[in-house]
Image (tube, rainbow, N blue to C red; front, side, top):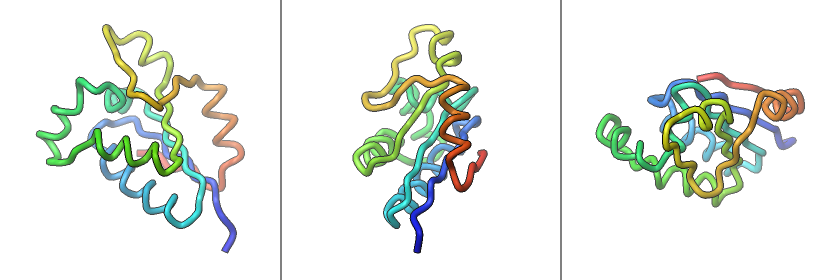
Length: 115
């Protein structure tokens, strides 16, 4: 089986736990996975937001993000959303990215999934 490149585009923070679990599944099969967090989804990359999503979904989003990074999943936060948010802190290991970065990676992907 040929390894695939998958890109997830997360625009809604409540979808992040599902996306990260699915991304971990695909990376465990030898696929290359990137996750872009935009709009409301970018809040997931701020450690101050972890408690909110943990209370909503009963999941440890911080552990999911740490595991994803340790397994080689690339995490990107939309630079416009992150830079415009007051006091936004980006989790260690995640990167800021703009539209050009997203398009470059998306064009090389076998699939782009939006959540």
